[in-house]
Image (cartoon, rainbow, N blue to C red; front, side, top):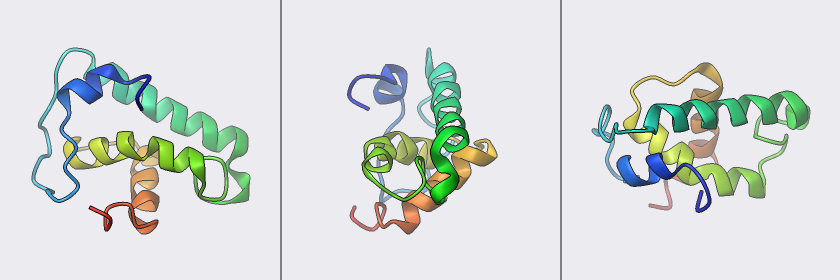
Length: 100
């Protein structure tokens, strides 16, 4: 997250305690970052996801590193494709939202 998705970091708030931010934070480059995040998610699942339901199969470091992106998208983006929505659900089940 720290090295990419600059538009998402700059325009999309990350607030795990609020669920009423749908549609907030859209700005220049956000749509492209969202598309890129979803494409990375689909590519990881296609290449390495056979061993489980997380990015690379079993939940691990890659999922934790991608969690800030997922949290922002899940909080603020009204509709995600199926792969990104599924990723957000798995992140929540892993307890990342409960840590807030």
